[in-house]
Length: 90
Image (cartoon, rainbow, N blue to C red; front, side):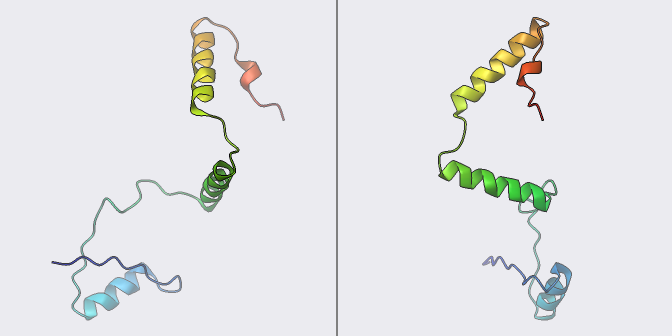
């Protein structure tokens, strides 16, 4: 059995594409692992794309710095100290 992944054009709904393929005697096999577990909004996708572009340009915080800040945040919380300074001011 060969597997073919098809992405219908934007103007054609997935249901109509499936119906057309079934009319041509194609067997439709749903692979649940290819379906997203959550819905991602256009704004979230845009933010992800922006982040990837920034990373390509070297504009990011290194993992070790993020982890250092997180350890400090947890330590302050455990010791009852305020983490207000970590909240971005608008």
